[in-house]
Image (cartoon, rainbow, N blue to C red; front, top):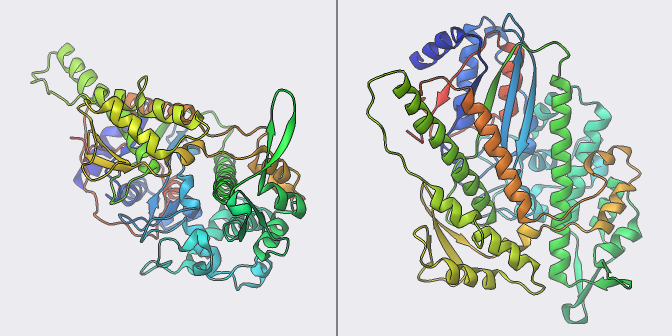
Length: 520
């Protein structure tokens, strides 16, 4: 605890400058738990130890079990906590980015969907949830693909009660909580639709008697026949006419999954907005402390589009970190005449160019998505042809569909299967219009006036926004780096928002802790 004590003392004597906490480490290293212990320590030395046991579990909607971590945060977050002149916390704001939407519809072996799905299924027998039509998590496609739906030592029903309490603590009305749970249940029913092939698979349909379709439409208050039709058809508009086309089974599955991901992402965004509203203050802010919880670098047995996005973001973050901590700080030491031996650091710009430069990995992916009959295999072949000579790109010996990127942290082999569809992530306007017309008033939370298909330009813009957030955090770091011991495992009983609530309710002093454990 010596490091934490020094950080607290140094922080109070730093000319009242804005400061930041950056907790870093690879996936599963224990970033969230490390931050929790640090924050509890600071709350204690700040004179508010009696309140440090307040725990909120709202971000069960953003945390999930992976093969590395039973409570992995599947999104990035930047929390800015405001202080008055006496260094009392007066409010906070949270920005999120790169929510792993694909987890809603797919989980790898030994992994789970977001905790909230299992918590709700475990509580389905409660009287207030009888009309959700839920049973155990094993009965739903979106929660059973990873195998075992339970986590050792975790009681999902008990955690669900804590999640509900956290919503209440944040001022979420009972009626709004009910709508949130109805939306989550509707997503589970959407995943269980029975899609029947017709005309040798060129067309398909969903029966009007399908139990899960009935539950989905009933829970969301949408028109049954319209949803039944537009789940299996799409509207095509040309310069001269508009016509309706049947979709194949695979196209319907892709469109259904895109719709499920869209609904969940809109729900997630609304909850974050509500949290920000609850934590907003009209009192003038004197200073702030920013808490940046960046994605950990990921490499699994099977790596797909999700790991590629996360690792791409990490490459950009690493570049900014190198520029600030090594280059700018060393220049500052030289200006001040401090005896210093310059440190050579790894320049990962060539790897970033491989990913985002013209005709790089992203550019070729975007191009293949625009081809009417583009495939993952054709895209992989274009990568081999274009980047075979790159020092950061390799073709696996035993595969014609995978590719290897030599990142700053490790060499990662990515399976190209699913990249195109996940990158498109197209939600059809007809389906969105049906949801907009929902009889459930609160459903309007989740939808904007117009929904653009997800394309790679969106990914680049998102990563750029993450880099901007990191830059803000780096500008408020002190001229020293502190290493902090990181646990090897995380308990699924903690979530990122729990830390924020504890900090906001308990802390009385402004503090700083910086963990450079995986970079120094």
